[in-house]
Length: 106
Image 1 (cartoon, rainbow, N blue to C red):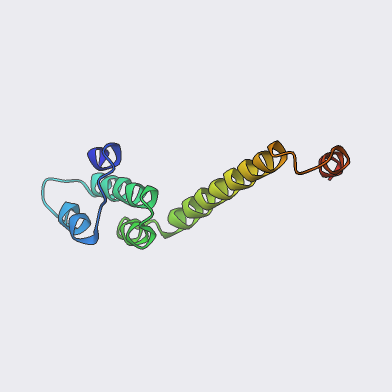
Image 2 (cartoon, helix red, strand yellow; image 1 turned 60 degrees about the vertical axis):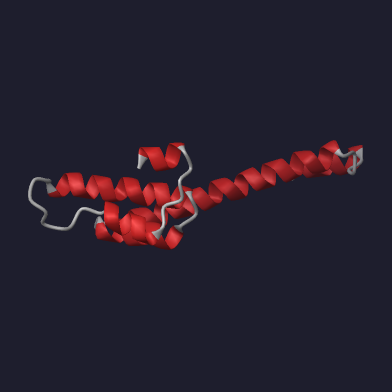
């Protein structure tokens, strides 16, 4: 998973299934399997494959965490978008001084 994230290799459904350790596999602890599934799910979420991330979080038995992480991720993107647009809008000199002070008061 680290290689996929580092080199931006897109994880598709077939690759994810091949990398998934079957449930009850001998030689691997359930906790280790869960950790690997969560790591794969986070990599999928970073790549924008939300349906695949949801599937892997569900296989790991962690439905709530996916919803919370996705919400936080989307809020972070939205805040960055607002921050960027606010400063690029003001940098263009579109707002006058009175308009800027009105924005600051809110």
